[in-house]
Each structure stands twice: as C-alpha cells, then as structure tokens.
Length: 422
Ligand SMILES: [Zn+2]
Image (cartoon, rainbow, N blue to C red; front, top):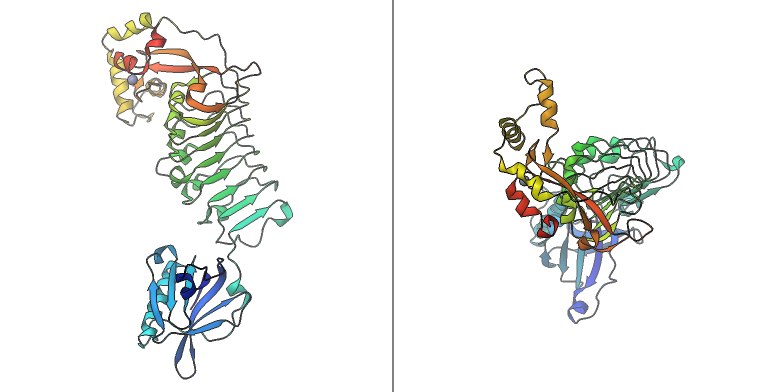
C-alpha cells in the first residue's frame, strides 16, 4: 500500500534548538513500507523530484509517533537515525492509521504480513506523486469535460461563460467541493440535489437565467442550510424567494442585486450571521419588519422602488381591534397554522378554506393571523442596522418603509416602539 500525502521532513535536532529544521513546505509524496531481500523493512517516501525515493530503517529506529490528529489525516513519525521527523498531512485517515500501526509492529520486530501487503522498492510513478488536484477553472466551452469526469478531489470549481444550461449530477457528486462558481452561464433552475452537498460554503450563480430559488434548498434538514456562508444570485430574473429562506443559518454574505424581487422573505431577519447584504437594482417597495433585526456591516439597496408616501396610520385607533375577543374562525385558523396541522387536501377540506388558510399573515412573533391584526408601514432609517450603506437613491436617502404585522396587544407592546405609537 502506498499512502498519498503531503510530507515535510524536519530535522528534529535542529528544530529543538529553535532553528527551522525543514524547508517549511510540504511536498506531495507517496509514503510506504517496503521489504528488501533479507527481510529488512524500510519506511520509504518518493516525491516528484525524487521518484527513486529515500528509505529509512524501521526496526528499533522509531523514537515516537505523534498520532493525535490521525482522523484529520495528520501525523508525525520521529526517527532515531537520522534525527528526522516525517510530518504527514492531507492523508487518507484510514490508510494513515494502518501504516502507523504497521510501523509500530515493524519497529518492535513483529510480523506485519497479515496487516498489509508490502510495496516493492520500485521508484514511484508520476501519478503516485502528482499533486492532488483541488482547484479547477474552466472559462471556455471546449475545455468543459464531456467524456471524462471531474477529479473527485476538487475543492474549488469554476465554470464560467460555458453556456451551461443546468448543474449536472457529476458536479453535485464532488463531495469535497467547498466553492462552486457557475456565474455567466444559462442555468434556469437549481436542482434539489444541491441541498445534499455537505461541504459547500460558497455558491456563485450570478449572471444566469434563474427565475426562482427552490424552497427544498431552504429546508433546515438540507446540508446546504448548515454550511452555506456566501451566496451570490445577482443578475438573474428572480421574482420571489421562498418564505423559509431564513433557514440559511451560517450565511454571512448574500448578493441578490439585479433581479426582479418585489418583496423579501418575511423571516429574512433570521439570518443572524448576515453581515453583507446587497439587493440593489430590484423592485422592492418596502422591507419586512424582521429586516430591522439584522446587524450588518455592509448594506446596498440602491435603485429599488421604495416610496416615501406610506404614512403611519393612527395605531392607537387601529389597536382597538384587539379589544374584542378573537372570532371563532380566526381562533381555529390560527391554531391550525400554529400547530402545523395538515390541511392541504382537496378531498376533505373545502377549496375556499384551504385558500383562506394559505393567506395567513405572519406576525413579528412568528404566529399567524387572518383578519384580526394590524398592518402598517413605519419609516426606518437603515443606518441603524448597518455600519456602512449605499444610499437608496441619488438623493442620498437612507430611510425605507418597513411593513409590520401585529397579531395581538401583547405583540403590539413588545414590538412597536413608543416612537412609532406617537
Ligand atoms: Zn404576534
């Protein structure tokens, strides 16, 4: 067995005197145990520069093995003679564990024949010592692989300007991918399977032809919701984002600029880690109330359709609606939605009732309401939620209308500040 890894050789005598014992740079290598005629076992490594390899005796020659981080593919093998440390990184953890066990056995003079097939001392092939490909950038259609597959070790993949119509399954299967950039293509929809990419942190689908974002990708069960930190959907034709978009709990950068959004998801305030937000050049007329609970570093809402005419109504007067007890219809509709009782069944539930239940408004508390609620627009200076922002228009305005829905007296006093009541 030959272990592919990154290897640095450090002289531990020199290093212990405070001097740099190695080159400081790990080389791609293949590390293995080999047997020489006469039954002597050697630990060998080969690199691209030295395919013949360097060999070290193992029997009674291992001073110590530092294997605390084996599960991360890291370990250090300290030899007595010569006084070197073999610092292993980026190895397959299972194979690394096996080779370390065999080194221990060989050091003690025990047989390892049942544990591992020993390699010959033949020089390494080029493939065995070539650097593992982790990045790939394709900017021309003719370079896009059609008959060959993508290297399974890829961590970053960019395919730009290649007229891609969809995201293929073989891209979704790249399980180490942390960054996927498919900007400037012709992608119309995002596949549901994208939600299963366990390592993906950055997704750039800007300059495509998306008209929506699938609600399945915002499912709290999807891997993507737990890992995504940067999402760029700018320069598409998206009109609406799903209500559960606030489930991207790790998202800190979101670019929605140059789309056709008329409203933002009501629960956008749930994106607690969001620091950069850009929704410039859309058709927004107002913002959801939860937007005011964000705490941003950068905000850009330039060129939308925020009006300054929506005035605050007489809230004290409107609030009288809460003095009456809730109607039976209101009470039961609220209960059904609050408890997530399944009602979307045309066989048992009248169509008109399903439509009614669908149209529930969401209060700031997260509760539903249907007819007994108050809704109003408050003008909020957005500078209060961000460290820096672009103005909303050429006149330098920073105040935008925010839509609020309130379901009860309790929520009224909880969410509506005294400044707004007056
Ligand atoms: Zn409420």
